[in-house]
Image 1 (cartoon, rainbow, N blue to C red):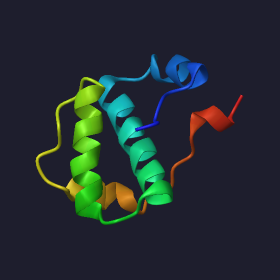
Image 2 (image 1 turned 90 degrees about the vertical axis):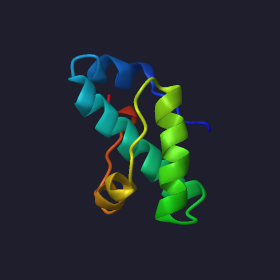
Image 3 (image 1 turned 180 degrees about the horizontal axis):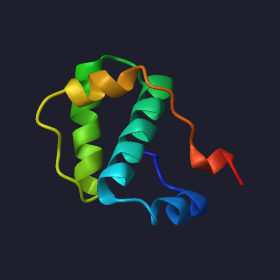
Length: 81
């Protein structure tokens, strides 16, 4: 996976609560997945869990977290500066 936070994103997210940071990472991952792979929401859920574990977060038990974030817009902070 080629998802990494930029220095600017890390600076912004360091001020956020852990849950807010986790949601941002999930949104960023889903955005990347829909752009690069886009097989299914269930596949995204499985791959996102692996990504979350690598980032030090607990995996999500069911795929509703992906379902709810799938259609939400994502504005990456790496584009702002």
